[in-house]
Image 1 (tube, helix red, strand yellow):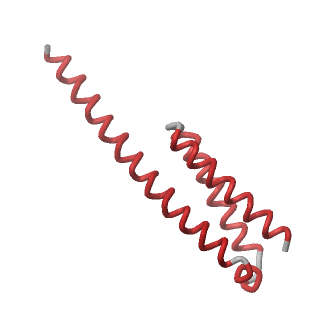
Image 2: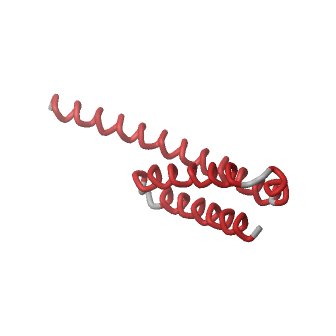
Length: 98
């Protein structure tokens, strides 16, 4: 059971790190660690029995909620980056016409 708790603790730490990457606008690192995070979640689910996972249901629900918040923040950041990009492109075109 300590192995499953260690994996769970590691997932919560990775979730915190992903938030830090978003806060610092380190989007490449965010994307790289997002893949690692996804793989670790899949490994947790694949390597433990249903009974083991049920025993940590409450922390898994907490992680699920944190993931939903992280996904929302990521989508907001992506939207903001697209908007900034469009503004920069528009400004370049305006400067080119001057």
